[in-house]
Image (cartoon, rainbow, N blue to C red; front, side, top):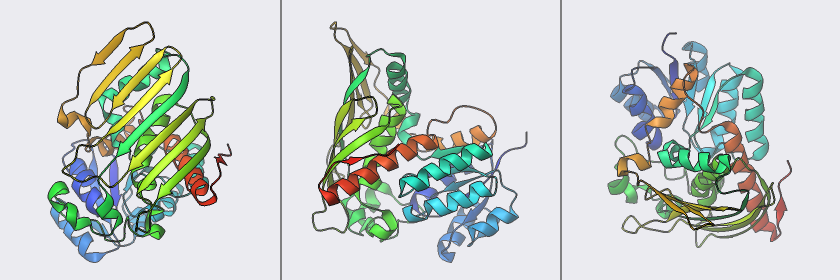
Amino acid sequence: MTKPRIGVIGAGWWSTDHHMPSLKSYDKVDFCAIAELKPQKLSKAANHFEIDGAYQDYNEMISTEKLDGVIIAVQHSYHYQIARDALEAGLHVFVEKPMTLESKQAWDLVQLADSRKLHLMVGYTYHFSEHAQIARRLVQSGEIGEIDFISILYTSWVEEYLRGNPQKYSDAFEFRLTAPEIDSYSDPINSGGGQGFLQVVHALGMLFWVTELRGDEVFAFMNNSDLKVDLIDSFSFRLNNGAIGTIGSHGGATPEQTLDQTLIYYGSKGFIRQDIIHGKLSMHLKNGEVKDFPDLEPDEVYKSFLPARSFVDLIAGEGENKCPGWVGARAIEFLEAGYKSTHSNQSVKIIL
């Protein structure tokens, strides 16, 4: 078949630092169009990546360019409508995490994609590491038995994003072409929330993909500090197989600190410890057997160029969807329950 024709919607930091360079350097894709509402960002991206198809209106791009798929990397609050419009137009969709801000929107996209037999992929980069594949295989094969407890600690340095000061991370992240907008993550209208929607969503994506379980009930505490959005989150939860678990997440670390992003999957036969940020994975069985898997090299931990290329491959009929829509939807329904819980001070059931 001819190379899939892909358009990118959104010319912000993540898109221009990761998705666009990945597509531009991949010989299996025709990266032919960019849509961006802000003229300056649009022209800068189009000129830099030498893309002729430049549009301020993404619907005009969809109707003009005869695309096979789109990559959506805009502010969180716009994910749903753009993704739905693209699916309605018969296009395969890659949408950045968080998939949407409401669970009913997320499941609507899943159902729509399924009904149209279209690929729907969510931007979970950690899923492409070798350790993620191993952890999923071990859990799904029953190596550690039935999952009965999950422990997650997820720290990150995003506080300045949540304060509307993204330029304070310019040395660490480089922002090669453009920096995040000051209100992308600090304004709850745009972001939906803070640490939960920006960071905990990573851990939830891994949890639900590795275990293939689903949330059942959530109780949460959140601390905003002096921000408009949450900075520190704590979740206690039950999954649909009866397993229980905890998630603790803090966004106030600094680039000078060592982060902790660890998931531990406990089962009836043993447990798996997955340190995703440091590339470490081990399995500990109840008979005393311990298996340490080879550590990942630094460039193997976070393969940010792979999600976009994997999306292209899916359209071409190759590979598997490591970040399917149902994973993103399960993460959103969990977060939705968590935010409701912290506001009501009650546990919240997830309605299946």
